[in-house]
Amino acid sequence: MTQKRSRYRWNVVIIFFLFMLLHQTDKLLIGPLKGLISEDFNITNTQFGLVVSGALVVGTILYPIWGYLYDRYARSKLLALASFIWGSTTWLSAIARTFGGFVATRASTGIDDSSYPGLYTLMADYFEPEMRSKVNGLLQLSQPIGYLLGMVLALMVAPGIGWRNVFFITGGLGIVLAVLIFFGVKDIPRGKSEPEFAGMEEMPKFQFSWAQAKQVLKKKTMWFVFLQGFAGVFPWNVITYFFFDYLAKERGYDENAVLFTMVPVVLILAAGYFVGGALGDYAFKRTRKGRVIVSSAGVILGALFLLLALNTPMEARGQFLVLMSLTAIFMPFSSPNVISTVYDVTVPEVRATAQSVEYFIENSGAAFAPILAGVIADAFNMGTAILWVSITAWVLCFFFYFGAFFFIDGDIEALRTEMAQRAAGDSTPAAV
Image (tube, rainbow, N blue to C red):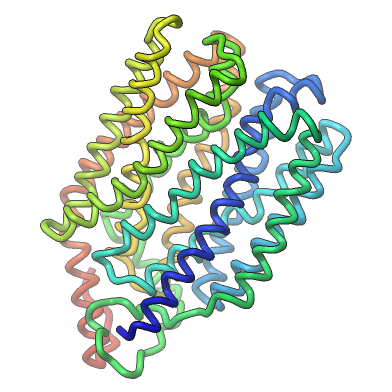
């Protein structure tokens, strides 16, 4: 690889990091703004859950469509379009004056939320398999940092200028990023970074086909990836949208206490993405089961420390902070490794579709997580809602990873065999 190409691909990482950082800030800002928005529209926890679920439902429905488009057309241009949609729909939600209008416009912000498969598949073609989890983890640092930036905007900016003006700012940044991606990111041939094609001057062109897309559903590893995805997103949605309010209303934290608690926790959470990705790549180099092993450890340890944290006495704030920090480091271990696992077993021309199906399945259940948590919170309290939903989901994820453990070797070997055949000029698919 030339030095120029190596430098350019890291420039693309920087652009995509900025896109994800600002997009996640905009998307997750509604959680820290829950109090202001609820007061403005005079709504309950359940109604607020409906606001959040609307965008999740829209995003879920559109995942297969975005995945198909990414596998057929230039991913960089579609990502620029997604960024423009992000900015436009956020502006619409900022001008809504009725609760019904706000639900509808916030739901429309889900259109671009399902656009990430194109970003990750493009990165997979820039970086070889042994580096993908680290790169994914680096990009996913943007998610918790975006949440942290959203908290700062909610606590320090929104009270002065209003929550609507904050959305005008984040929406405007989405349109700026659309221009940057359109002119600053080039597409790359699908499969370019696969080791079997290293040194080839002319890459074969891989076209999307429904036959290859159907093969994804025959890979047993993907069955368990789909199942863990369905369960695994429940805790993220519940914690993201309710934890801020939980600290303020049930643990008695004022704005400064919330900020000084959440800043270190979120920074540690951000580090967890990269640490989990790096550990996944390290383990993958030693055994093809490595990413699954790291993911399994993450969900069990995250569940254990969350259980201990939420059962900490209210007055033991130092102990609570330590236990939440331990929860935060392990929570993201799965995320970068699951994405890489999907690409470890699927051919390049259907990877966006495969990942979109995975996201569709996980979000089809998780779209209702905020509503479920809202109902439990109204019936009991927010702490109970966060704990019940999260622990149950993570225990299920552990068993699903255990199932994938038995099939991952065979599915990876099938892909490597097929890539070798293609590099040799044989287009006949390998046996599944």
